[in-house]
Length: 382
Image 1 (cartoon, rainbow, N blue to C red):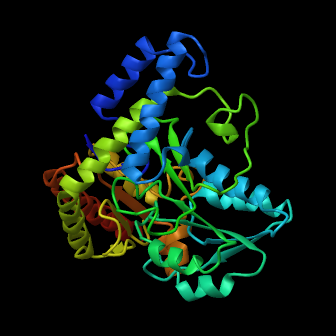
Image 2: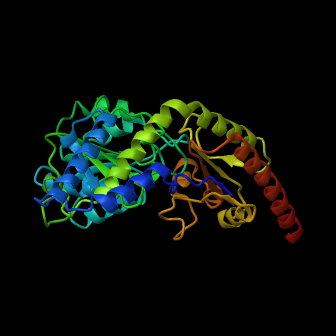
Image 3: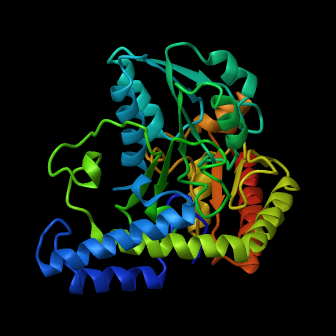
């Protein structure tokens, strides 16, 4: 089996599973309890929070634990919208955001909020001038993903943060689910106010996540109850999952330093090889994230190519995993190229640090063979 669908989810590191099992078995107390077991759990929770804060070079008090990217994005966007509603109801985002951002914004329109969607160019990037022109007196939030989950385009977050620093009343949220552990981002230097990270994208466990909230930023909670996470996110903390997340994030950040070149070499090989195939169009920008290569074969439906690859023991995906079962048209590719045939035939390859060049060679050979066979069948059918 060759697993090239790491943008959908990653396989947990063995050390992560071991940590989860150890904490679940030996430190199962509620961290809010006053007895010894509770105190032990609370100490582990605090240690995990500090480790993650140190890795992100922020304060421990700015780290909040969530159930993942979807909750983190909803909490950042809706929580900010509710806390700032008396000041304004205008939010700026882009045309290629993850469904958890897009749908959260759509939900807010029913509450009287106005959303501006910035277009992107053929490299999947916004124009900073578009952002500047979209800012208004009643703008309260700009929400933009760092690395696009479908094509791997990288937004100019640092430049956006520099621009938004001139508008102190506008908060800046970054969805860093696909970038964390793969593409460097300094939260502090980029003047980011809120940042979302998901555990299962960095070889942690599903159901774990991080929301960074800059000190001084007010976010209304979506859940009400026991006032955990300093009242921002009520609910008994998943201590075992959080400890496992801190370990996964530490290993992934270390791998980013040690193995980035290897990941980039695999991408370069796939990018060059796919570009040379007749009938194949590359959707990912060449200077995008090192772990994502997205391509189309206009005329071939995504599912046909995906299942043909699966029959060869190769696992890839079509659009975002969160929407792939509902639709096969890539809204990101459509926003970049405005070509329906191209948007309907999308395949995403996404790698991680454990993947090898030999796997990439096998995948490229399989794609070449399958595309040639399918096109031959289509010509006969015509």
